Image 1 (tube, rainbow, N blue to C red):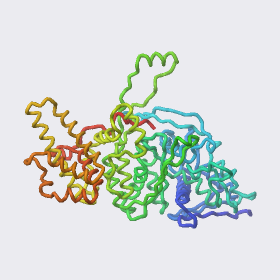
Image 2: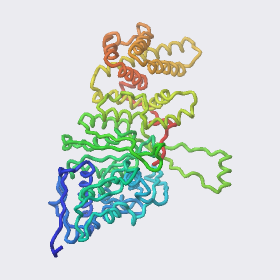
Image 3: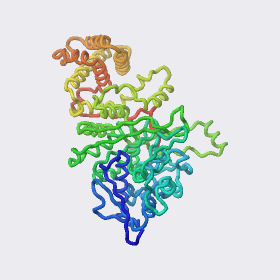
Image 4: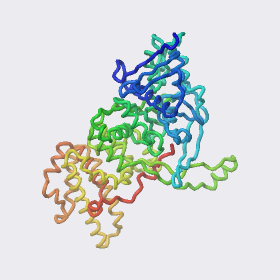
Length: 561
């Protein structure tokens, strides 16, 4: 190349063959260059100007070979500090750069998804630390350390044939190992995971930087990454740099794919200036399966395009059922275990006193919102992600069914469910909310009848009577697997109260109940179960009070990230 001659590369969001990951790569490139400007990093011979970083495109230039410029760029974009990934594009402030625990979320997410296979990215020792976030919060972090000299994006750039002998970008297709499309790596024969133009390959190697990473609360070995559908680089950058997308550990745990996807989309559309923009993303869950243990594979993929209504409803859900910091109950060590530990010269288990709690049922509600379904549908059936945790709980309580355990776990969210029911925004059909009100009135009458029995000198306490009554109603509703059976169960239930205690809604609008059952009996059953799980006295409902209860069943406490 002649002296003072420049090579340049331009990528556009609307360019041919530019998919979801490629657009994320363009955003990562733009944010990396912005970070270099803020940190005053010397990336020469790489050059760019303010006009090169637009909302729809990125242009870079080099006064030397493109190989020298891009090598310098990748060395800056992908760094390791204290053996933890440091990505200037998203870790711009001083706290993130100097405190490795604030980067652990992104580090673990990338290492469990894009760079999860040891043959792709060699990993170091497992490091565990107790971190005091402040006087009241203490967490435990764990991560596998990295060697910066063997970081895969940098080594692939040098070895995958991206450049010719003169340092220009290769014109023929290049091949990359399976980390650029994690979870679908080839398993048989001479296949390669990805093959395509070198210019597109550069973007794919930058894309993981700006993806969002979360961990499934109920399956700690399963990680999710959210690939944003970037339509405006500057708008996306302003949202991606928010602490909730990687720096605050309390936001790492999610309950489902819908929870992870809508968390990003709801925040993306929260600003009035962004509400009319197209908002979409792809969320991928990666974890272990019994038949293929050597590496994590894709266990779920969802493409989401959220409407303004869905985002508004999720913001309500996230406000009512947010992650909470919980105090861990100290575990007493038996004398036998203490002696065995001393014989082996082992130290007591070092556990943080706090953990993040994710309310039961939030994952199902978020998935319903993502699919534009009523938020309460199938709420009383665990998601596939929840089955393992509920099964562990069931083994501790022999003779108790999975459905019953899940229902009683949801009772810990009685106050939150009540808040969701009272939000008009959550309902498409006001008759459904009126049905819940009618069911509450029936329950109030039945509870009043049990109180009268106690006053007459019954042998059982009021609490025992209510517990048995609720279990009887739950069992009757759960066993109603057809429309006729549900009609019979509802008729029997609504006929129990004496005449003076009958529900005013049922007396004035009998057509409401039967219309909903005839129209969609499964939806009616879910509404009835929702009313049973969320019931509070009329005084509490009118006062808008929440029950003072935990947000997570003690048997299903989360494990620290």
